[in-house]
Length: 171
Image (cartoon, rainbow, N blue to C red; front, side, top):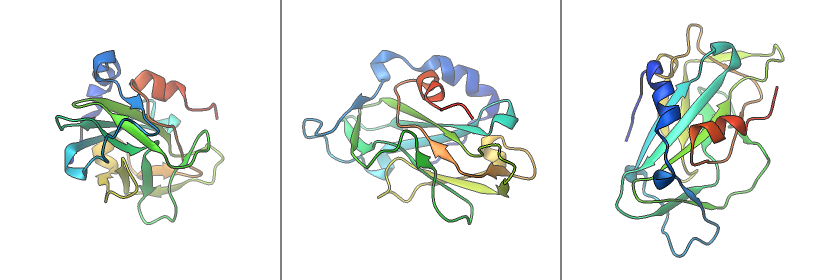
């Protein structure tokens, strides 16, 4: 399911997470199956100020059962090679999302080194086996000339937006 939320809703998203909807870390989670792509609603929004080049990714399990995704999102940028690397570095393991639960990750798209390239889209997937949802720069709130990208990183999944944003290392 594709969802693009207007930038003014970001403060509401930051307040909306509750422990009842939080995800649970799940290496070997009591038999929860992998999430089907159609059971996940994916949102992405650039956080102000734009100069920080931070995108908040929000995934909701819309199904009536817990399921698993990868420990961190797969985020790719336009026609550039590669994806955002997880920080801290990690390998793939299942991460459970409760039925109707929400998870969040923060993505820093540009490290501020001055080697920035700009792309018109980014694609987010909760699991590398899923095709992902593509968002335009305008849909996530990035101004012209597009989404700034250089050495992008992503956090692991967290149960709240604040925890995901706080997990980004300083530039």
